[in-house]
Image (tube, rainbow, N blue to C red; front, top):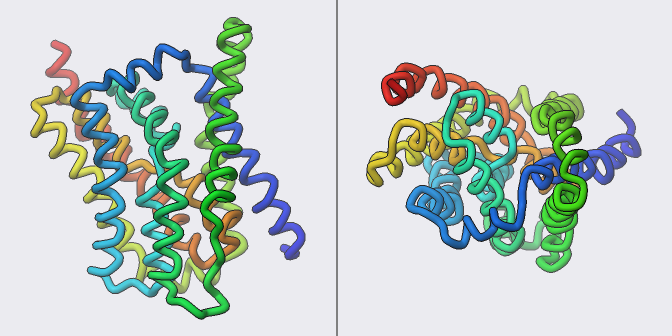
Length: 295
């Protein structure tokens, strides 16, 4: 694949696909949903706190514990600072979890991380890769916030406007776009793997244990929080999915488009596959518990 083709995908198609995912989420939201976030609830506040505080610490600690090379460790950390994705909402729906809680967590984390991601990245990039190295990507905090707002907040607002003024059309479009998140995720991961196959294969054995550990730790922490709060099985499973299934498409956008680095995307490619497999296993594990809770 030519450099021009790679640049076109990174600069145009990946942001467009991510914006489309956010637009489809906006089609299902109304202003009253923001009031629900402000009012919150134990599960919602616990999930939001986990995303903003616990996950970045887990990503940092696991990269250090497994002694990953700097680029793999930074790629893993980038996954940990990303919000929940709409793929997690789809998995929650399939698993018969608390879909309202999942959507609110995805919306809340998507909004807040527009501001937290650039700040954390500004610290993390030189910390992981060192300073004075020509390979270290430069990062402008305000520019990055603007990029994240354009591909997340604006499409969400546009989707909400369509729902407000054309609710019937919004419902039809939302149904047709429902598979979008999964299709875009698979397409972006597939593209990234295709153009960095040698790097993925070379680092598969070294990176996979740490990636698996981060995903299991994230889901496990979600389950522990749910149990500590005395939540039912549906809410515990939802917290685990929302905590462990990150917006991998956004992570790849940050590495491929914002930072322009293929090596940083290696861990994210593998994480995208691992999180889907583990979430599927979690849903199957909870199936009997949910059946008992509804009888």
